[in-house]
Image (cartoon, rainbow, N blue to C red; front, side, top):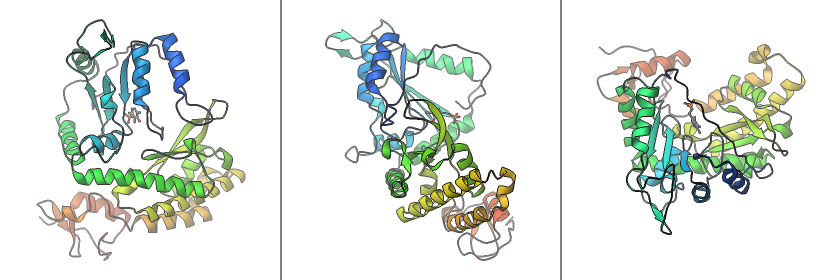
Length: 375
Ligand SMILES: *Cc1c(COP(=O)(O)O)cnc(C)c1O
């Protein structure tokens, strides 16, 4: 939405559903049983660390059975979904929630690669008739009435004026998403996620659901004796960005023993499958180090200079600096805002200043360089 939350609160009664503790997959039978008892007004599918496809057909059946509006929060996977819906269907990228859901929401800043913010889609017009019965989806009317309610909930309820800069940035992102290049990128994102998953599985790492259908992995660290927190910390010091996250254990209890890792960012930098195998090595090494650190009860303060960490961090730096940095690509090398940096290559001055704060060499020719304004 791009706006500040203005302090007006609405209260909802919510009822969560769970994954099957053994398989890690949504337990649709239990979900149905609970939904039929609870009779929610709205049933929501979508999640922030679910590595598998959502069964939209089943969600639709359950929503119809209890007269609920079906909403999908596709924040994580909107890029995967867009890559399919924008282009030919015969190359199945991702099953689309748009065919089954009444409302679809997304963030713009995840796999969609847009500016921070959100987007809401809703159905308009007449409701479909099924077996001669009108599905009541929300109310008794035969037409959808989401438009007015959603618009009002956004403005004036939650948001001030429109943020035209964000809207423009989103338009640019969506234009990129509609290109064949983006579709190819997304296919690679998924392929690389599978490559990363199998490389970790080869090292006997435990992935929730045993793998992935999308761009992310959920890694259960408990058999390595780790919490997500300590692993995340060690990774961060080694310049590896991932998120600690709670996972369900065998008894269905929430434990802090996981992390989620996704491939879009490193894919944008041009990593190949073999690079993701190297990334798997880094991750596994970080897990070993985190385990040592945890056992030695070493203070987190001392980690920066820990010998193993310094070694891994150096390997990560040498690896990561081989790849292009979006914003420093050659396509930016023409135009008014370009500054030469000593070698023959030129960049946007802001980008190159940031880069040179870290490195004093050109990311293309590796010549040692100084920033210099052209105008
Ligand atoms: C990220 C995310 C959101 C929005 O969170 P932000 O903190 O605004 O980025 C909403 N739903 C899901 C499923 C998400 O993954």
